Length: 421
Image 1 (cartoon, rainbow, N blue to C red):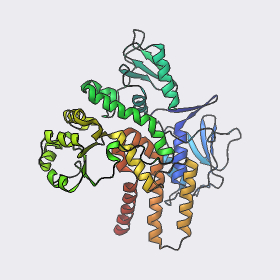
Image 2: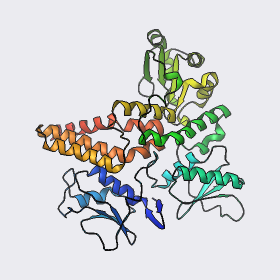
Image 3: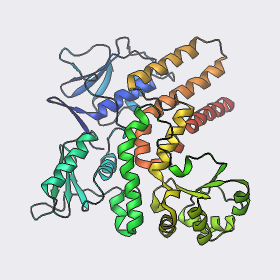
Protein backbone atom coordinates (compact mmCIF):
# COMPACT_ATOMS: atom_id res chain seq x y z
CA UNK A 1 0.00 0.00 0.00
CA UNK A 2 1.36 3.44 -0.87
CA UNK A 3 0.21 6.96 -0.19
CA UNK A 4 -1.56 8.76 -2.99
CA UNK A 5 -1.75 12.50 -2.41
CA UNK A 6 -4.02 15.29 -3.55
CA UNK A 7 -2.53 18.76 -3.71
CA UNK A 8 -4.68 21.79 -2.96
CA UNK A 9 -3.08 25.25 -2.81
CA UNK A 10 -0.18 24.77 -0.35
CA UNK A 11 -1.58 21.68 1.37
CA UNK A 12 -1.13 18.00 0.67
CA UNK A 13 -3.88 15.56 1.55
CA UNK A 14 -3.78 11.79 1.65
CA UNK A 15 -6.35 10.49 -0.84
CA UNK A 16 -6.82 7.41 1.35
CA UNK A 17 -8.78 9.85 3.54
CA UNK A 18 -10.86 10.86 0.55
CA UNK A 19 -11.82 7.31 -0.42
CA UNK A 20 -12.50 6.44 3.24
CA UNK A 21 -14.79 9.45 3.44
CA UNK A 22 -16.54 8.55 0.20
CA UNK A 23 -17.00 4.96 1.40
CA UNK A 24 -18.73 6.22 4.53
CA UNK A 25 -20.95 8.59 2.54
CA UNK A 26 -22.19 5.91 0.17
CA UNK A 27 -22.24 2.94 2.53
CA UNK A 28 -23.67 4.60 5.67
CA UNK A 29 -26.01 6.99 3.91
CA UNK A 30 -28.35 7.16 6.92
CA UNK A 31 -25.69 9.04 8.90
CA UNK A 32 -25.72 12.84 8.83
CA UNK A 33 -22.29 14.02 7.67
CA UNK A 34 -21.06 17.59 7.42
CA UNK A 35 -17.67 17.32 5.82
CA UNK A 36 -14.12 15.99 5.87
CA UNK A 37 -11.60 17.90 7.98
CA UNK A 38 -7.83 17.81 8.43
CA UNK A 39 -5.72 18.69 11.46
CA UNK A 40 -2.02 17.99 12.03
CA UNK A 41 -1.88 15.08 9.59
CA UNK A 42 -5.07 13.47 10.89
CA UNK A 43 -8.49 13.42 9.26
CA UNK A 44 -11.94 13.72 10.76
CA UNK A 45 -15.38 13.03 9.34
CA UNK A 46 -17.72 15.41 11.08
CA UNK A 47 -21.00 13.76 12.06
CA UNK A 48 -22.72 16.06 14.57
CA UNK A 49 -25.15 13.37 15.77
CA UNK A 50 -22.51 10.68 16.18
CA UNK A 51 -22.34 8.75 19.47
CA UNK A 52 -20.35 5.73 20.60
CA UNK A 53 -23.56 3.69 20.31
CA UNK A 54 -24.36 4.79 16.74
CA UNK A 55 -25.06 1.80 14.49
CA UNK A 56 -24.19 1.12 10.86
CA UNK A 57 -26.84 0.42 8.23
CA UNK A 58 -26.41 -3.31 8.90
CA UNK A 59 -26.83 -2.94 12.67
CA UNK A 60 -23.23 -3.19 13.89
CA UNK A 61 -21.34 -0.52 15.78
CA UNK A 62 -20.52 2.28 13.32
CA UNK A 63 -17.07 2.97 14.76
CA UNK A 64 -16.15 -0.70 14.41
CA UNK A 65 -17.58 -0.84 10.87
CA UNK A 66 -15.49 2.17 9.86
CA UNK A 67 -12.35 0.71 11.41
CA UNK A 68 -12.74 -2.36 9.20
CA UNK A 69 -13.68 -0.50 6.01
CA UNK A 70 -11.48 2.60 5.96
CA UNK A 71 -8.12 2.60 4.18
CA UNK A 72 -5.55 0.96 6.45
CA UNK A 73 -2.87 3.60 5.89
CA UNK A 74 -5.07 6.54 6.84
CA UNK A 75 -5.37 8.27 10.21
CA UNK A 76 -9.06 9.08 9.97
CA UNK A 77 -11.96 8.83 12.39
CA UNK A 78 -15.60 9.80 12.84
CA UNK A 79 -16.26 12.54 15.37
CA UNK A 80 -19.02 14.76 16.70
CA UNK A 81 -16.52 17.33 17.98
CA UNK A 82 -13.75 18.71 15.80
CA UNK A 83 -10.31 19.92 16.95
CA UNK A 84 -10.10 23.71 17.17
CA UNK A 85 -7.62 24.01 14.29
CA UNK A 86 -9.38 21.55 11.94
CA UNK A 87 -9.69 22.72 8.32
CA UNK A 88 -12.57 21.62 6.09
CA UNK A 89 -11.13 20.11 2.93
CA UNK A 90 -13.88 18.18 1.14
CA UNK A 91 -15.31 21.33 -0.48
CA UNK A 92 -11.89 21.95 -2.07
CA UNK A 93 -11.12 18.39 -3.09
CA UNK A 94 -13.28 17.07 -5.87
CA UNK A 95 -14.85 13.65 -5.36
CA UNK A 96 -15.22 13.37 -9.10
CA UNK A 97 -12.60 10.78 -10.12
CA UNK A 98 -12.52 11.51 -13.85
CA UNK A 99 -13.53 7.94 -14.59
CA UNK A 100 -10.36 6.34 -13.24
CA UNK A 101 -11.19 5.75 -9.58
CA UNK A 102 -8.94 6.52 -6.61
CA UNK A 103 -5.25 5.71 -7.04
CA UNK A 104 -4.36 4.02 -3.76
CA UNK A 105 -1.98 1.12 -4.43
CA UNK A 106 1.15 0.77 -6.51
CA UNK A 107 -0.88 -1.29 -8.95
CA UNK A 108 -3.40 1.55 -9.38
CA UNK A 109 -0.59 3.98 -10.17
CA UNK A 110 1.06 1.62 -12.62
CA UNK A 111 -2.19 1.01 -14.50
CA UNK A 112 -2.78 4.73 -14.82
CA UNK A 113 0.76 5.54 -15.94
CA UNK A 114 0.60 2.84 -18.59
CA UNK A 115 -2.64 4.32 -19.91
CA UNK A 116 -1.36 7.89 -20.00
CA UNK A 117 2.10 7.42 -21.53
CA UNK A 118 1.78 7.34 -25.34
CA UNK A 119 2.53 3.89 -26.69
CA UNK A 120 5.18 5.17 -29.11
CA UNK A 121 7.39 6.33 -26.21
CA UNK A 122 10.35 4.18 -25.11
CA UNK A 123 9.93 1.47 -22.50
CA UNK A 124 10.13 2.71 -18.93
CA UNK A 125 10.29 1.70 -15.27
CA UNK A 126 8.88 3.40 -12.18
CA UNK A 127 11.71 4.50 -9.94
CA UNK A 128 9.60 5.82 -7.05
CA UNK A 129 6.08 6.83 -6.11
CA UNK A 130 6.27 9.11 -3.08
CA UNK A 131 6.79 12.01 -2.55
CA UNK A 132 7.21 12.15 -6.35
CA UNK A 133 6.34 9.67 -9.06
CA UNK A 134 9.55 9.25 -11.07
CA UNK A 135 9.28 7.51 -14.43
CA UNK A 136 12.59 6.47 -15.98
CA UNK A 137 12.70 5.84 -19.74
CA UNK A 138 15.16 3.46 -21.35
CA UNK A 139 16.05 5.99 -24.05
CA UNK A 140 16.51 9.74 -24.18
CA UNK A 141 13.31 11.78 -24.50
CA UNK A 142 13.57 15.45 -25.47
CA UNK A 143 12.01 18.49 -23.80
CA UNK A 144 9.05 18.53 -26.18
CA UNK A 145 8.22 14.94 -25.30
CA UNK A 146 8.52 15.69 -21.58
CA UNK A 147 6.23 18.71 -21.94
CA UNK A 148 3.77 16.54 -23.86
CA UNK A 149 3.78 14.04 -20.99
CA UNK A 150 3.23 16.81 -18.46
CA UNK A 151 0.28 18.09 -20.47
CA UNK A 152 -1.27 14.62 -20.66
CA UNK A 153 -0.83 13.94 -16.93
CA UNK A 154 -2.23 17.37 -15.97
CA UNK A 155 -5.24 17.13 -18.28
CA UNK A 156 -6.10 13.73 -16.79
CA UNK A 157 -5.76 15.02 -13.21
CA UNK A 158 -2.96 12.65 -12.27
CA UNK A 159 -2.81 13.29 -8.50
CA UNK A 160 0.91 12.85 -7.86
CA UNK A 161 3.75 15.16 -8.81
CA UNK A 162 5.47 13.48 -11.75
CA UNK A 163 9.07 13.58 -12.99
CA UNK A 164 10.25 12.01 -16.26
CA UNK A 165 13.87 10.95 -16.75
CA UNK A 166 15.91 8.71 -19.00
CA UNK A 167 18.28 5.94 -17.98
CA UNK A 168 21.87 7.03 -17.40
CA UNK A 169 24.79 6.15 -15.16
CA UNK A 170 23.62 8.44 -12.37
CA UNK A 171 20.45 6.44 -11.83
CA UNK A 172 20.66 3.49 -9.50
CA UNK A 173 19.02 0.69 -11.46
CA UNK A 174 18.36 -1.24 -8.25
CA UNK A 175 15.80 1.35 -7.10
CA UNK A 176 12.94 -0.23 -9.00
CA UNK A 177 9.92 -2.07 -7.67
CA UNK A 178 8.84 -5.40 -9.09
CA UNK A 179 6.22 -4.60 -11.76
CA UNK A 180 2.70 -5.82 -11.14
CA UNK A 181 1.84 -8.98 -13.03
CA UNK A 182 -1.06 -8.01 -15.24
CA UNK A 183 -2.12 -8.80 -18.78
CA UNK A 184 -3.52 -5.29 -19.12
CA UNK A 185 -0.18 -3.46 -19.10
CA UNK A 186 0.48 -2.57 -22.74
CA UNK A 187 4.22 -1.93 -22.45
CA UNK A 188 4.73 -5.39 -20.98
CA UNK A 189 3.68 -7.15 -24.20
CA UNK A 190 3.97 -4.75 -27.12
CA UNK A 191 7.13 -6.42 -28.43
CA UNK A 192 5.19 -9.69 -28.86
CA UNK A 193 2.53 -8.11 -31.09
CA UNK A 194 2.43 -7.45 -34.81
CA UNK A 195 2.33 -3.80 -35.88
CA UNK A 196 -1.37 -4.05 -36.83
CA UNK A 197 -2.41 -5.56 -33.50
CA UNK A 198 -0.17 -3.20 -31.55
CA UNK A 199 -1.78 -0.27 -33.33
CA UNK A 200 -5.30 -1.58 -32.70
CA UNK A 201 -4.70 -2.14 -28.98
CA UNK A 202 -3.05 1.25 -28.68
CA UNK A 203 -6.05 2.89 -30.35
CA UNK A 204 -8.42 1.13 -27.93
CA UNK A 205 -6.42 2.29 -24.89
CA UNK A 206 -6.05 5.87 -26.15
CA UNK A 207 -9.78 6.13 -26.86
CA UNK A 208 -10.50 5.05 -23.28
CA UNK A 209 -8.48 7.94 -21.85
CA UNK A 210 -10.47 10.46 -23.87
CA UNK A 211 -13.93 9.05 -23.10
CA UNK A 212 -13.82 7.51 -19.61
CA UNK A 213 -14.75 10.74 -17.80
CA UNK A 214 -17.76 11.33 -20.04
CA UNK A 215 -18.93 7.75 -19.65
CA UNK A 216 -19.51 8.02 -15.91
CA UNK A 217 -19.83 11.76 -15.29
CA UNK A 218 -21.86 13.20 -18.16
CA UNK A 219 -25.33 12.52 -19.56
CA UNK A 220 -25.65 9.60 -21.97
CA UNK A 221 -24.93 10.58 -25.58
CA UNK A 222 -27.09 8.26 -27.67
CA UNK A 223 -25.00 5.85 -29.74
CA UNK A 224 -21.84 7.96 -29.72
CA UNK A 225 -19.69 5.12 -28.34
CA UNK A 226 -21.22 2.28 -30.30
CA UNK A 227 -19.09 0.98 -33.21
CA UNK A 228 -20.42 1.75 -36.68
CA UNK A 229 -20.75 -1.96 -37.41
CA UNK A 230 -23.28 -2.29 -34.56
CA UNK A 231 -25.30 0.90 -35.10
CA UNK A 232 -27.59 -0.44 -37.80
CA UNK A 233 -30.79 -2.16 -36.70
CA UNK A 234 -30.35 -5.84 -37.42
CA UNK A 235 -31.56 -9.11 -36.00
CA UNK A 236 -28.66 -10.14 -33.77
CA UNK A 237 -27.73 -12.72 -31.18
CA UNK A 238 -24.92 -12.80 -28.62
CA UNK A 239 -22.93 -16.00 -28.13
CA UNK A 240 -20.68 -15.96 -25.08
CA UNK A 241 -18.05 -18.61 -25.79
CA UNK A 242 -16.35 -17.91 -22.46
CA UNK A 243 -19.29 -19.48 -20.59
CA UNK A 244 -20.63 -22.38 -22.61
CA UNK A 245 -19.97 -24.23 -25.89
CA UNK A 246 -22.00 -22.97 -28.86
CA UNK A 247 -24.22 -24.71 -31.38
CA UNK A 248 -23.34 -25.10 -35.03
CA UNK A 249 -22.61 -21.72 -36.65
CA UNK A 250 -24.84 -22.57 -39.64
CA UNK A 251 -27.86 -22.56 -37.32
CA UNK A 252 -27.10 -19.03 -36.16
CA UNK A 253 -26.34 -17.79 -39.67
CA UNK A 254 -29.69 -19.04 -40.95
CA UNK A 255 -31.63 -17.34 -38.13
CA UNK A 256 -29.81 -14.02 -37.55
CA UNK A 257 -28.42 -11.24 -39.70
CA UNK A 258 -25.44 -10.70 -37.41
CA UNK A 259 -23.84 -12.82 -34.71
CA UNK A 260 -21.84 -11.21 -31.89
CA UNK A 261 -19.33 -13.72 -30.54
CA UNK A 262 -17.55 -13.25 -27.21
CA UNK A 263 -14.23 -14.87 -28.01
CA UNK A 264 -13.09 -18.00 -26.16
CA UNK A 265 -9.85 -18.09 -24.24
CA UNK A 266 -6.80 -19.48 -26.02
CA UNK A 267 -7.08 -22.82 -24.20
CA UNK A 268 -10.72 -23.32 -25.27
CA UNK A 269 -10.51 -22.00 -28.80
CA UNK A 270 -10.21 -25.36 -30.59
CA UNK A 271 -13.17 -26.81 -28.68
CA UNK A 272 -15.31 -23.75 -29.46
CA UNK A 273 -14.47 -23.85 -33.18
CA UNK A 274 -15.40 -27.53 -33.23
CA UNK A 275 -18.72 -26.63 -31.60
CA UNK A 276 -19.34 -24.02 -34.27
CA UNK A 277 -18.39 -26.57 -36.92
CA UNK A 278 -16.12 -24.10 -38.74
CA UNK A 279 -12.42 -23.47 -39.29
CA UNK A 280 -10.44 -20.33 -38.48
CA UNK A 281 -10.47 -19.41 -42.17
CA UNK A 282 -14.26 -19.72 -42.29
CA UNK A 283 -14.59 -17.60 -39.15
CA UNK A 284 -12.32 -14.99 -40.72
CA UNK A 285 -14.52 -14.89 -43.82
CA UNK A 286 -17.65 -14.36 -41.72
CA UNK A 287 -15.90 -11.49 -39.92
CA UNK A 288 -14.82 -10.01 -43.25
CA UNK A 289 -18.41 -10.06 -44.49
CA UNK A 290 -19.73 -8.53 -41.27
CA UNK A 291 -21.91 -11.51 -40.43
CA UNK A 292 -19.87 -12.05 -37.27
CA UNK A 293 -18.72 -9.40 -34.80
CA UNK A 294 -15.86 -10.59 -32.57
CA UNK A 295 -15.75 -9.27 -28.99
CA UNK A 296 -12.61 -9.54 -26.84
CA UNK A 297 -13.67 -8.20 -23.40
CA UNK A 298 -10.51 -9.31 -21.58
CA UNK A 299 -6.88 -8.49 -22.23
CA UNK A 300 -5.82 -9.74 -25.64
CA UNK A 301 -3.12 -11.76 -23.87
CA UNK A 302 -5.88 -14.17 -22.81
CA UNK A 303 -6.69 -14.99 -26.43
CA UNK A 304 -4.99 -16.49 -29.46
CA UNK A 305 -2.86 -13.60 -30.72
CA UNK A 306 -2.56 -15.15 -34.18
CA UNK A 307 -6.35 -15.33 -34.48
CA UNK A 308 -6.81 -11.70 -33.50
CA UNK A 309 -4.14 -10.56 -35.96
CA UNK A 310 -5.82 -12.54 -38.74
CA UNK A 311 -9.24 -11.05 -37.96
CA UNK A 312 -7.85 -7.52 -37.84
CA UNK A 313 -6.26 -7.99 -41.22
CA UNK A 314 -9.53 -9.05 -42.88
CA UNK A 315 -11.81 -6.43 -41.26
CA UNK A 316 -10.69 -4.28 -38.32
CA UNK A 317 -14.12 -2.64 -37.91
CA UNK A 318 -15.73 -5.95 -36.92
CA UNK A 319 -13.25 -6.72 -34.14
CA UNK A 320 -13.86 -5.01 -30.78
CA UNK A 321 -11.52 -4.81 -27.80
CA UNK A 322 -12.13 -4.35 -24.09
CA UNK A 323 -12.26 -0.55 -23.87
CA UNK A 324 -14.67 -0.10 -26.76
CA UNK A 325 -16.89 -2.86 -25.36
CA UNK A 326 -16.83 -1.11 -21.97
CA UNK A 327 -17.91 2.17 -23.54
CA UNK A 328 -20.94 1.01 -25.47
CA UNK A 329 -22.00 -1.48 -22.78
CA UNK A 330 -21.94 1.18 -20.06
CA UNK A 331 -23.86 3.54 -22.33
CA UNK A 332 -26.59 0.93 -22.84
CA UNK A 333 -26.77 0.13 -19.11
CA UNK A 334 -27.06 3.81 -18.20
CA UNK A 335 -29.77 4.39 -20.79
CA UNK A 336 -31.85 1.50 -19.50
CA UNK A 337 -31.26 2.13 -15.79
CA UNK A 338 -29.70 5.54 -15.00
CA UNK A 339 -29.72 4.74 -11.28
CA UNK A 340 -26.98 2.13 -11.65
CA UNK A 341 -24.36 4.67 -12.74
CA UNK A 342 -25.69 8.20 -12.13
CA UNK A 343 -23.68 11.15 -13.44
CA UNK A 344 -23.62 12.91 -10.05
CA UNK A 345 -20.99 13.59 -7.40
CA UNK A 346 -20.65 11.66 -4.14
CA UNK A 347 -22.82 14.07 -2.14
CA UNK A 348 -25.70 13.82 -4.60
CA UNK A 349 -25.35 10.03 -4.69
CA UNK A 350 -25.57 9.99 -0.90
CA UNK A 351 -28.81 11.96 -1.08
CA UNK A 352 -30.22 9.45 -3.57
CA UNK A 353 -29.38 6.52 -1.30
CA UNK A 354 -30.60 8.34 1.82
CA UNK A 355 -33.93 9.18 0.18
CA UNK A 356 -34.41 5.58 -0.96
CA UNK A 357 -33.53 4.36 2.53
CA UNK A 358 -36.01 6.74 4.17
CA UNK A 359 -38.77 5.82 1.73
CA UNK A 360 -38.31 2.08 2.31
CA UNK A 361 -38.00 2.47 6.07
CA UNK A 362 -41.26 4.43 6.29
CA UNK A 363 -43.18 2.25 3.82
CA UNK A 364 -45.74 -0.36 4.83
CA UNK A 365 -43.93 -3.14 2.95
CA UNK A 366 -43.31 -6.44 4.79
CA UNK A 367 -40.16 -6.50 6.90
CA UNK A 368 -38.57 -9.21 4.73
CA UNK A 369 -39.10 -7.11 1.59
CA UNK A 370 -37.61 -4.06 3.29
CA UNK A 371 -34.52 -6.05 4.26
CA UNK A 372 -34.12 -7.27 0.70
CA UNK A 373 -34.39 -3.80 -0.81
CA UNK A 374 -32.07 -2.27 1.79
CA UNK A 375 -29.47 -4.86 0.87
CA UNK A 376 -29.72 -3.79 -2.78
CA UNK A 377 -29.43 -0.09 -1.87
CA UNK A 378 -26.27 -0.76 0.16
CA UNK A 379 -24.76 -2.82 -2.65
CA UNK A 380 -25.47 -0.02 -5.11
CA UNK A 381 -23.65 2.48 -2.88
CA UNK A 382 -20.67 0.15 -2.60
CA UNK A 383 -20.50 -0.25 -6.38
CA UNK A 384 -20.52 3.53 -6.90
CA UNK A 385 -17.34 3.78 -4.83
CA UNK A 386 -15.39 0.91 -6.36
CA UNK A 387 -16.66 0.65 -9.92
CA UNK A 388 -14.51 3.38 -11.58
CA UNK A 389 -11.29 1.75 -10.33
CA UNK A 390 -12.39 -1.74 -11.38
CA UNK A 391 -13.50 -0.75 -14.87
CA UNK A 392 -10.34 1.33 -15.40
CA UNK A 393 -8.15 -1.66 -14.55
CA UNK A 394 -10.12 -4.62 -15.91
CA UNK A 395 -11.96 -3.03 -18.81
CA UNK A 396 -15.08 -4.82 -20.03
CA UNK A 397 -14.28 -7.83 -17.86
CA UNK A 398 -15.04 -5.67 -14.82
CA UNK A 399 -18.57 -4.78 -15.95
CA UNK A 400 -19.85 -8.24 -15.08
CA UNK A 401 -18.97 -7.55 -11.44
CA UNK A 402 -21.32 -4.57 -11.22
CA UNK A 403 -24.69 -3.29 -12.33
CA UNK A 404 -27.66 -5.68 -12.39
CA UNK A 405 -25.38 -8.65 -11.66
CA UNK A 406 -24.15 -7.53 -8.25
CA UNK A 407 -27.61 -6.29 -7.24
CA UNK A 408 -29.09 -9.67 -8.08
CA UNK A 409 -26.27 -11.33 -6.16
CA UNK A 410 -27.08 -9.28 -3.07
CA UNK A 411 -30.75 -10.27 -3.30
CA UNK A 412 -29.87 -13.95 -3.65
CA UNK A 413 -27.45 -13.87 -0.71
CA UNK A 414 -30.14 -12.29 1.46
CA UNK A 415 -32.59 -15.03 0.50
CA UNK A 416 -30.01 -17.72 1.24
CA UNK A 417 -29.26 -16.22 4.65
CA UNK A 418 -32.98 -16.02 5.44
CA UNK A 419 -33.56 -19.61 4.31
CA UNK A 420 -30.62 -20.98 6.32
CA UNK A 421 -31.83 -19.17 9.43
